[in-house]
Amino acid sequence: MAPLPDRKPVFLIDDLETLKVLSDPLRLQILEALDIEPQTANQVAHKLGLPVSRLYYHLNQLESIYLIEVVETRIVNNIIEKLYWLTSEEIDIDKNLFDFSSAEGHKNLSNFVLTSLESTRTKIIQSIQTLKVNKDQGVETVPHNMVIVNITKRLSDETYQSFIARLKALIKEFAELNDEFGQKERKNYFSLSCYAFPSFIYKEDQPVEED
Image (cartoon, rainbow, N blue to C red; front, side, top):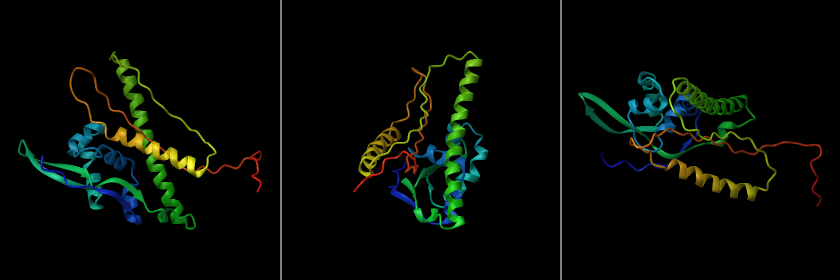
């Protein structure tokens, strides 16, 4: 493989058209699959458990807004294969696109949140269904931990930001783990989804701080 191009630290989405292209559960899954290393459409399809024909349109859409790019083209069995990779280490969204003072801003945020949650929901359901199929077919499976938790805490901004910094370090550690291959042990795909955000809750018995 030719030397890989340097990726930008952050891809900032600051226009509605780009955000709309990103607001699709399958495209988010494609971006996740391409995060670590360049892959062909066939490799991504295998990871997602989908026919490759379903991916071409979405790959073209992501390429059209420069979220992914072709980093290598090669010929395999007289067929041209393209290797796609993300153009940046992270993706951020301009908060102005989520301006609640307008109906469009409210819609943009709702659509993006629903898209992200739908992508996660789909992967969890697929995981449970695959586990059931394997069990019904008598395939020996190793129990895995699945963690789904929802916690709300009252914290200072300093405490929250300190925790987020440590959480991001763990997420980066998980993202940088190398895919393991080989026949000695069965290897499985594992997913990590994370949501942390300010949660504004009013409680009548909440203590009032005095000056």
